[in-house]
Length: 354
Image (cartoon, rainbow, N blue to C red):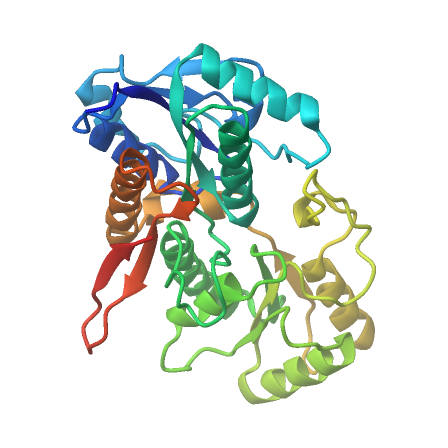
């Protein structure tokens, strides 16, 4: 049997209601694997690794680690949006030096597509420089955009189900607000996270599966215009006297004064204007078919950290994916990501793969 090596786990990107349960799965499974000695957490992702800010998670009591199941967001070991670029040799050199100094043989990065790429790059570089390093990905994104469009690589990502559940509740609450306030505010516009991926706003339909609400959903994937939205909303107003509109934050309706993060992604909540504001402005300027005005409500980061709406299935799947990631690491299956695949059949069932 080979000598046990240490493991570093880090997180990247936006948090989710269940990200800490993936971390818990990694730590608890690592305790049972003879190939893994100490588990370190990179404080604030790869930036913490670069600063040699490593938290000894193996020193924490089992009771403390168990609390990660109900810990919201990413406050346990933090996250970051620091992109390691191919030409940043100093960063890569620093990471390898730190891993060598701490006898690290396993690196698990919890995050989205960019994080999976980072884990693989770091592992390959370590191997090129004589460090026996295994790089594993732990999938996480509320946007549900890791993998392929055919869902062959992964059926869905941890975090999405909880955010979908959040939106089901939010739209039900918004419907009561709109119903009661419609004489003065007949149109309520809500904006959902997800950048230009429509899984989160699409989840708003879970609030109204029988299509009884005056609910309209606009996904970023389908081009539209303020004129078309105005026409559709007025048709709804003539029929029902009120309307709820859910838009993707990445719905392209005009200039929003984009602000981008270090990965080059638009940070919609930091930009000068929002899609929801553009819709409200467009509706009010063009005029509504009934008296009153359109108004908007933009939920913030509570979409991705609110434990009140966390899905029990999502929590369990996040945990098992963490366990699977630790097992892949111990088996030296570098370059893989732990995944969920849907089993065929009428009842929901999944299996865990790579």
